[in-house]
Amino acid sequence: MLIAALILNIAILAPVIWALATVSPGMDAAFGPETDARRILTCVYAAIAMVSAALIGLHSLGHVWAVPMTLALFGVQISYKLATVWVVGVSNPVVMTNILVVVVQIATVLVALRAGSLAA
Image 1 (spheres, rainbow, N blue to C red):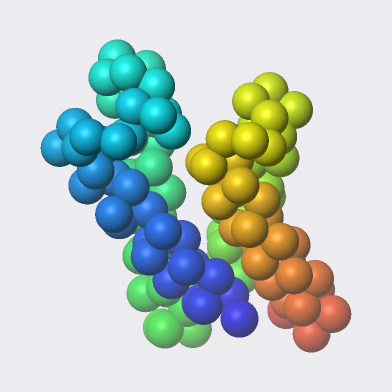
Image 2: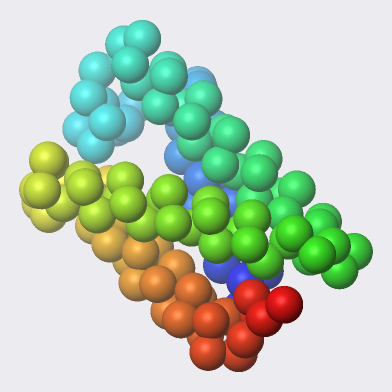
């Protein structure tokens, strides 16, 4: 389930990164006008996607740090995505997508913890 959630990260972020990077029409409604802040957000999204891809590779190799690193990434994502609910509000389409991702990531973390993925 960890790998599936990482794939979901990439599947959601890839088209968003592309649309933000190419200044696609329609992105202004969800992300605001093209500004330095929006380009910085694009870089953050790209970093999350690249780390997700690297973590898939680590999981595939059975690396001992793959699970805790994935859970750390999800912890950061869950925190900032939940913060958008209070800061921006649920009427924004980005926030609605964030809520969906949070549900998947929390479920993934709970399954990993229940399965004893962090057992020494």
